[in-house]
Length: 265
Image (cartoon, helix red, strand yellow):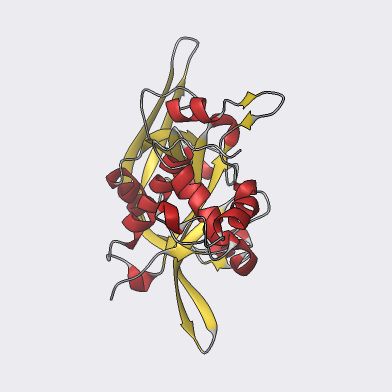
């Protein structure tokens, strides 16, 4: 069965719980050494004496889509629908970290019944597509030192260790063997804070009668009002836009796509 990844709009999916649960037999043990001359850290893979299971109940609340502190997040995923009720089966949520020009993966989840079908890779490819379209220099995410399967998956997707936080969840994270590991995927290792495209599109040209700037998502309604005209699109080779969401998608993935430099007037 082919599964299609589709947008999960905020007004429909906000607050949808993500029941992260996993069982692990291994963990990466963090060994830290400090002196006046050297700071050192080693992450060594070891086995638990007995398998450990982590569930949302440990932290009093499950993860959920579109949490308030993730401004400008967008989510994509797979869902089933029965008798008018939609049930999410997989999702990825991303959110821009504007000050550093990186894209954060804030949620990534695939239901057990859909494991080993390439869905995790497809979702991660969606994040890379978004990062590329937005001109981000890197994608960042977090997982736990005991989630060995997730670590292996991220590394298979081209991510590498960025750093760690030894007290992200509790002040006993090291002894609990559940340390936050941060991973990064570089879109362009040569890039500074802004990619060449971002440097370009962040420039504006303004005169008394003219303003040239890059497309912004807030332009979606204006674009729709223009692009819905049946006398406009067809003569240029594209059909009239049907709604504002379509215009927004064009701004995100066409006008702001890689090597595309269009300006609204």
